[in-house]
Length: 268
Image (cartoon, rainbow, N blue to C red; front, side, top):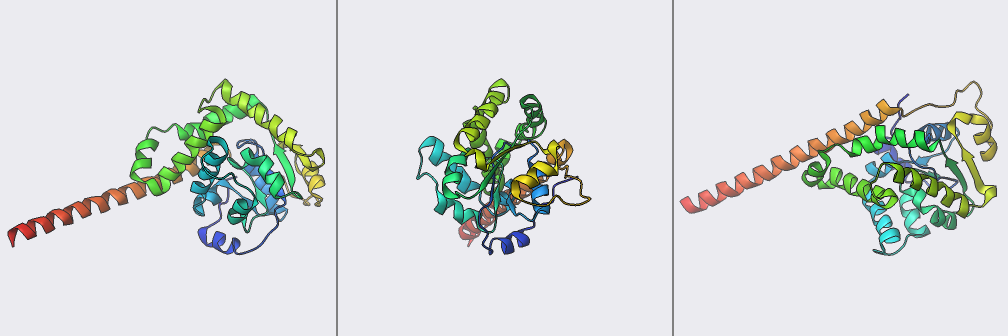
């Protein structure tokens, strides 16, 4: 099963609504995150996912948030900054949001925390066959320069995210940082607000924690496998290529017009 992305028009209407923040999903990506998101949608929640940040143009702001917290560049984020981006949503997830667990807990003191997890070795293998694999495509640096508005924004954000997390080391250091992150979330989250959860556990523990009825005759979602993930990011890459070609064409036409104008001026 593939992930269903909201359209720009759907998001435009969604962000006009007010929803109190209810759930902080503070586990790392490739830990059953998208299956959990699909399940929460079936339970009536409205998660704020990475693709929503791309479509809404939020990635540069989250890049600023990372720089403020980890590099000391700018004002650290709190509730006013989060509220501006999270209007219309009642769940947050995916990097870099888990890096701000303490700040989220302070901003939304009534929210519940789901710490989605999986075996660390399986997690690292999954990351290296999906996200880190996509990120290693050699065309990204050039594409980021030719399409700064889209590909450049994505590449800058991802580079900084994983530099902060693991120094862009996708081996044992990354696994160590994964374990450290989970210890961090456990340390800062009150135990009565925390559910440690693996999606293979299904509906029962999730619904019990959230006070929801288990959906009748509804299998727990299983989405975003390796193929779907790489295919989805291939579409993002293709969109960046489209923008790059368009930018090059506009640049070429500008030069051509400039040369023609200079020739006409000299020849008149």
